[in-house]
Image 1 (tube, rainbow over the protein chains, first blue to last red):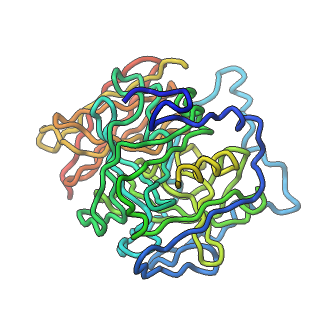
Image 2: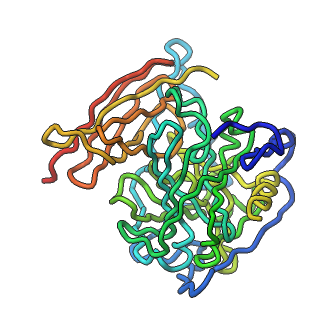
Image 3: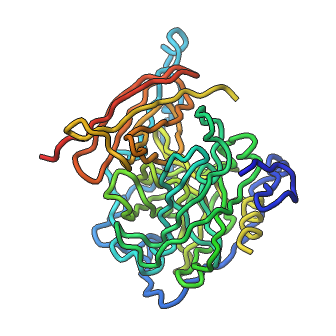
Length: 315
Length: 90
């Protein structure tokens, strides 16, 4: 598929990100979730996490800072760097104890909203990722799931060829079948710049599977709201038995105007997962998981321009 | 954009045969990396983009056998090669 960069040139017309650079987070706004048909919904806990057998959220409040503490010097560089240069930081997407638990009842809401993705790139290489419904035909995922930039591999960059979407997959079982999409969305901040802050996109399905499995709400929330929230992630990591869904939750670690950071354990294959909070029993995405980092993992924050694009893509 | 590094490799089973469909990703690296995993081709090969110069640990997971891991150092714009071997499960 050709790379289209001008508004109005076909199904892959990107949305400009120029306003985003100047825009703050934006006013609070949200779109509601839907639990679909016969949801058999798993009730969440009062703490804002999902209730899953064997899952114990860590007690430490990652975002809380005591009033009387010594200055945090952990982010300061070692004086030796002045002479010898920085040491290589090492990424670990599973930090410390691995708290992930496998989801077995993936045919129930909310687990069936999460989809295992099998991606075929322009060079026919294959990849795995995760996406989640926001409407009858629309899934949200990472930008690098639908559009590959600066890979260094001849023929790989650009829109992927196709993505097989498997809602609520559980190993070899596909409780809602699978559907293949060739219709994708992203933004120029990702497709032209490869900017981590704009790493989000959408998959448009030819069938309204979301009417059956339901979808997540999503919203723009304040810094204070997010930092007080438990963040939940479920997806399809590549280090577990093929096609199995795994869940973890933890307090949001920090936020900036474009990203949300958290110490939730993830692994390659979970790019595109919803980072969501639970409000009055409803699941609302606050970010799109995209990166593993040296001490925290991170997702693209849903701020007003992201929210507005998602509303358009939801249809 | 600067030219990224690459890690090209192959995943083998304990008997030295290439493994198709193995899941390969970075387990650790010098900076934040996309949380995606490659599936090996029918000849067991893969190519992962290494956007930062430095040391990367890779892991491969197949449907059979214990995961294979390897560590490789990648220079900016250069290609490193690696072989990942899935071990027999104890």
